[in-house]
Length: 509
Ligand SMILES: Cc1cc2nc3c(=O)[nH]c(=O)nc-3n(C[C@H](O)[C@H](O)[C@H](O)COP(=O)(O)OP(=O)(O)OC[C@H]3O[C@@H](n4cnc5c(N)ncnc54)[C@H](O)[C@@H]3O)c2cc1C
Image (cartoon, rainbow, N blue to C red; front, top):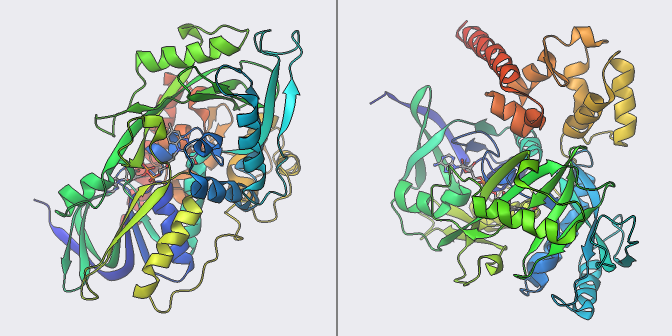
């Protein structure tokens, strides 16, 4: 047993989980003046929060399940988030081919009417009818009509990281690769035991926030030794990535015979992202993988709609995650509520409160965090009021447009390719200049790992964005994993190893 170190500091909040919900809550709380500690057992956004369809959306199909509260809140959040982070979020038009035997046109028109009017909308265009010209259309010739409406696309993992950076700037302490192994209440405080590569240590907190996503109920039972107030349904969703399936910037929402829908979304210039599935999951949430049936299902839905026929050989990459949904005992995985439930347990003022997050969407993370703070207000008299609705996320400061920023980057760094400048503009917004400020040409960016990744960016990700492994960098901070081969990954790993050793020596000195 390693020595148990105890940090003398007592935090207002200790948050378990570095997904969008944990980090969103930490950021909101830190900005209100609370002292916050977050532990994440792996990397930020390494589970559900990087395995989403990457949409900031109202959820048209949730209207069918009468989730009006959720849809209204989510619709309104689209423009709030678009304004907060215009570099990582973009408006996206969706085309829904009409297949009369599945849903009648009047039903879809009614749904779209609500979709256009339920939430505040200033920037996003409303819905309209579309017709498809047989020759130019990527769809089968028998699909001649459809509908079009707006939602937004987001870089999900970066949404988490940007919130984490902002939380840190408000004083939050965030530790990745640090697992909470237990927490007990002693004299009105939580004593939280954590473990990472440096050993086992303890922090204290007035309030414990359990945002462990797929592990939320298990954490209450096993790590806290308490009874979970709600059950959790783990619903697996998988995506496949194929070379660009059609020209243009629009997404399609395809209705399938089983009443489910599948999105095809233009992805990273060269690809189309196709998903998702909705399958009950009973395995270990640490290791979720796409099944052969899911691959076949997604290919079939596309082939039913598009002229270009896809086969297994077209699949470039896949990813899967599990939605941690609050169990409403629905028979159908697609119908389980996507809304969130916050469970606050504080038996008396002498007891330290535990707040657990069940369910939720990427889209509603900010509202979920506000709702959490509302529930915690009685425990923190001097807590400041809500602030996140209008606060820009890091990189959105002084941001006008991707094109303008891209030009600025290309003017500063002589010889930098357009694709790299554009990637930086999207990922870091105006904070790109944080790692470029002392450089004027491509030769000053340090080791070149290929595909527009240079040492200067890697160092920034390690120093400022909690990146440790090549996967953190290639899969979540950038999406360069689709370009890198094994040899190139190995070179990056060697560099990271040396950097890690150097940082350790500097810390010791
Ligand atoms: C296939 C799919 C598609 C989706 N598409 C969309 C979409 O397009 N739009 C949208 O709005 N939403 C979407 N969602 C929903 C959204 O992704 C999730 O609601 C959200 O990411 C959940 O975030 P979370 O923080 O609760 O969970 P997670 O991201 O899983 O974070 C929980 C974290 O807690 C950590 N943790 C657990 N136990 C411990 C412990 N003991 N100690 C330390 N850390 C711990 C885990 O490692 C994990 O990183 C989708 C979900 C899926 C699965």
